[in-house]
Length: 249
Ligand code: MN
Image (cartoon, rainbow, N blue to C red; front, side):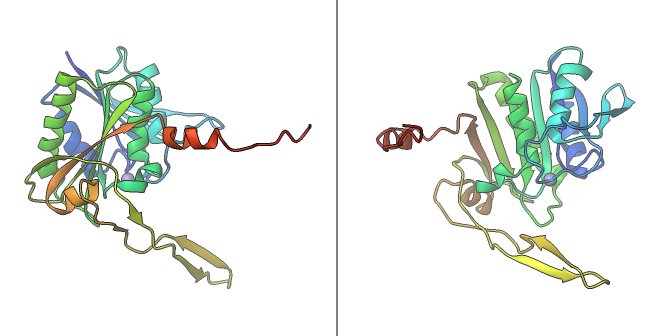
């Protein structure tokens, strides 16, 4: 029996994770192991300086008082008796495209699964906020089944973004480029002290052919293979020519 670990960064009570879990139950035995609270933009954080605990809701549902990466780590190493065949994360409320993947807790959960040697996929739904989770879920199921059938090379994961509503098909894509608004809203509290909200403005992306953004914008499911080796091999050749001086010489 195929075992699937389902997690997310929006929290165990979010709509998206239950749509995803339902789709995965058509493929295998599903363990929902997800954060108790919303953990969006927590990236790949692991809880190392505080005790980690969880609440077992039933044999197949665990509420973790921690991050998405904690969920995957704890799930694989402690909760699930056998290693899962697949880790899926999402369906996130909002897309995780382009540079966003570096902040995303949704993607980080799939990165953690990959590091632990389990094929992993992150799923995110475009929209602000999106609503068509149940329409997106069967597409996630098909992609998961394909990963189980075709296998992923290591250390590669799939980052999937879906349009919110009518879906025309699939496109294999590269990461796009996001234009950050770089704004900070300064607000005064009742005592006159300032506090701040960063990045409050709506996100925009460049239209780049073959990118995740362009695919989703045109109504297609974007599938981007991500590789965990972030080394810039082209620049490595260049930086080898730099003349770094020995400061102790
Ligand atoms: Mn999220």
